[in-house]
Length: 206
Image (cartoon, rainbow, N blue to C red; front, side, top):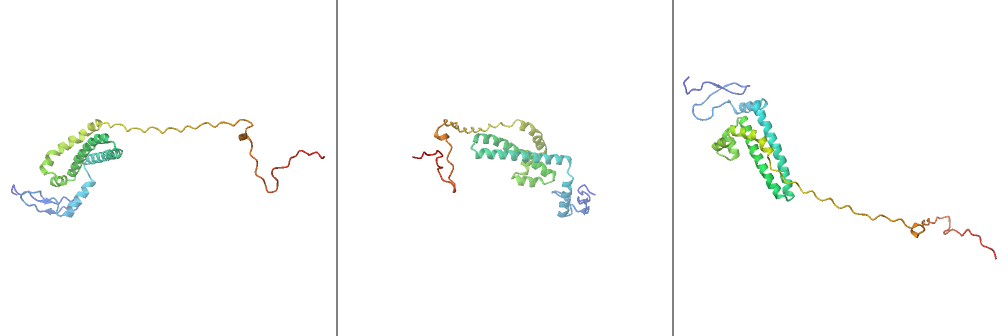
């Protein structure tokens, strides 16, 4: 075996293990005998994530949830014409977006995605991605997030609308005794009686 010969290699898919040929030269060496074995290996690997990968996944979900809350609040401020509060909250949203971008980059690295593919998704050169979002830079950003979330800008409180005045009602006055308003109404006439009733006072005969 010469120094240039890396020796035999085998497919990383646990269900396969077939020997694969390696070409000498530049480029990433093959790790699977076929694309199907590559997909099977990545699927099996997702089910057994390392502790670091699980921590990165939890951090990504936390940042995404907090960003969603900020965006919801930002939409409310924009629709209710509160531009100063919305502009202040945009700073928080931009910082959360940067944190989420760094977390997703690390998550893609945990899945062994190629650096060139990650850079292409972001529209960045590979060298800039490696320099700006190195593994150490992503780790520092993750560790500093709790401090930055504690020092977020404070939004002005929303103006509470004044309660509507309660309509005042004039107290009803009782009618005076003996007044016409206090008199009982006449009952309606019935079919078998005459109305008004006859005078019960007897009349003297002449």
